[in-house]
Every structure is written in C-alpha cells, then in structure tokens.
Image 1 (tube, rainbow, N blue to C red):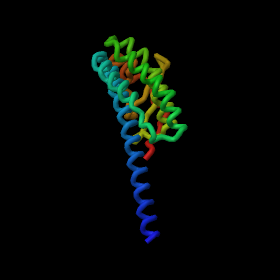
Image 2 (image 1 turned 90 degrees about the vertical axis):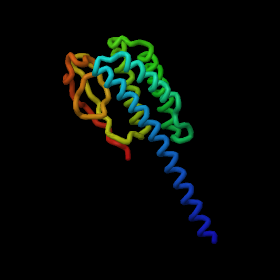
Image 3 (image 1 turned 60 degrees about the vertical axis):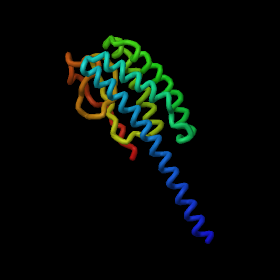
Length: 167
C-alpha cells in the first residue's frame, strides 16, 4: 500500500511540475510573440500597430510566472524583464516609427539575455544584425526583414546567431 501511495504522490508531483513549467513557457512565448509583433510592425513602417503591440508586451512583462522559475531565472527575469518593460512602455507612448526604432535595439538585447537565462523559448530565436544601424534585433524566422529601415532596406542584414528552442 505504501508503494502505491508513494507512486501516486510522485506521479502527482511530476504532473504538477510539468504543468507549472508549461505555464511559464507559455508566458515567455506570449512575450516573444508580442515582441515579434512590434518588430513586424516596424518592418511595415507601422508606428500605430507597433505602439499597440508594445502596450501588450509591457503588460505581458508585468506578469512574470512567479514561483515557476529557479532563483537564477527569477533574477534574470526581474532585471531584464523590468528593463524590457520600460522600453516597451517607451515604444507604446509614440507612433513615431523612428523613435520606436530607436528603442528596438535595447528591447532586443534585454529579451535575448532574458531568453538565454530563462531558457523557455519553444521555438528558435534568430538574432539578426543591421550593418547600417549597427544594431541587432530578434526574429522568428531566418529570413531577414529589417525593422530599422523597413521597406527602404527590407533585406539589409544577416542572421548572426540562433538560440535553439528549449523543448
């Protein structure tokens, strides 16, 4: 009877941990999705959509999956999530595409550092570089679509690194 009870308890704990981990991963995927929406709006020279999506990112970053992360992950989330949230807020407060683009490099850096530390991305993250702007951005695809110059120089840039999915 003790073995059955212990086995059942271990099964329940394992299921709970997997559920909690899945919630944290979904939360991080929501953040990445909101970031990609901002980046894609800037690719399309659409400041209004970028501002709207930045407000969504700001909200998503304000809801960290507390209690679902290790101490090191929580620390990285707090440090870089807070900075990313402030940058998202700056993007959300203007529809001027050039001002929004000015904030993108910092936002990209904080989210990439956070992604590496937290390790919850469910799909590959491509770090791309614009040699004209001397700045990086993140992409969900390997195809280069430059958010710093949009339609003017859409294919300018290259993929410099890939953060593999953490499945």
